[in-house]
Image (cartoon, rainbow, N blue to C red; front, top):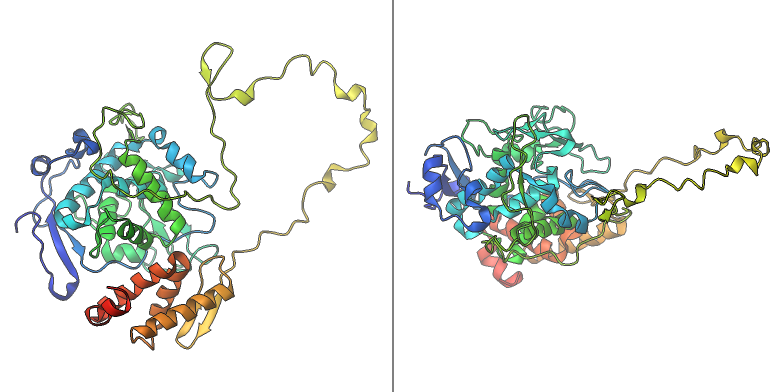
Amino acid sequence: MAKGKRRAMGGSGWRQVAPLIPLALFASAFTVSATDDPAVATAALDQGLGKNNPVVVPKQPIEDPANVAVNGVVGNGVDPGEQPTQVVSGLSRNGIPNAALKAYSRAQQVMAQADPTCQLPWTLVAAIGRVESNHGRFGGNSLMTNGVVTPGILGPRLDGSGTAKITDTDGGKLDGDAAYDRAVGPMQFIPQTWQMMGVDGDGDGVKNPQDIDDAAMSTAVYLCSGTGNLSKAADLNAAVLRYNHSQQYVDLVISIAKAYAGGSWIAVGNGTEGDDQGVDRAGGVVDDPNIDAPADQNLPQAVNLPTYPGVKPTPTPTMVQGGDGKPTTSPTKRPPTTSKPSTPPTTSKPPTSKPSTPPASKPPTTKPPAAPPVVAKLQTSVGLIVGTVGSTLTELTKATTYCQSELSKVTITHPTQQQLQKCVTAFQTGGTKAVDQVIRNLLSLLGLLGVLGGGLLGG
């Protein structure tokens, strides 16, 4: 089959196909944009891959999330104390490991063949890698030169304690937990989603979620599934929202992708022994005039970056001049003047007057433990419907009533519990537009979109 040819796969639901070609051919098969940095983009993989290992993209959007939101955390790769603006402003200092950068670039260029209408930018895949695992470096992990994260990244246990509740789907094979699922790898795929659509991105015969090559290519396939065009704001938002059903997550990912597209990135070593730590592909300067305009420069930017409730921003150090004339970032750690300790406070206030207040009475031992996050539940005629973390029963009832009404408009008067749950979750995380998309997907699966969708959902 010729490279880039689109092929219908019958009833399997998979269409676009692109063979993973050997590196020597890969380097000459594409017109590499300056943004990708040719030195990185054309060296995407060390191994050669044959025609028998194609990448295919499903013609229906993958609805099962790659990862799920955790209460109070936007992603493993983002410190709970960081505000979104701090994350974005620090990107060019944070750096992207070489192995990850090659995997992201490879994903973009393969998708340019597998599904050119998707318009996937590598910066979007990189932004997800930054939020999910800090490019494979979360929890003391490092990326080996072959792209495998070591010792391995596991997300929080999805046991319903501040998270969704997902009982084990892989027998603990991927996440080591035989009771509940945990997201795995640098792109944080839930085991059941990985088993459904994981991709062997480096042609070694293994689909490994801990391998950045496999994980990044799988993320690209996930985002391009369906017929969306990621250069359009609505399609972009919908694709990332499918990946993780949190608008806060979407806003941060898109903002990071926009910053990367503007040149706010550098390539660094993978952090392993003998690795080159001094590589700097983008110059390490935001808006470097020597970098050409990126191919994905029109990627929509998130509007009004969110502020995480209850989180105090981590102060950003400012450069000041130290006593030796050199700049320092610790202006608050200067030693106190010697004049203050010369008058010890013990000379004016005898310590004998304070024993009346035992120190043992001061610890806040009476404070109750933090209450678990509230998850509203509503019993309906089709089964139990669960609200998003923090939502009230009133909000859940409103969402359920709205979904039942909208579904009935398209003749789905008796939805299944799964159909109703997806609609309710979409309403609570993305509003009425998200509900419209869920209904469109449902009608498409039922073969009714051409008959009913245009008139009832506005074309």
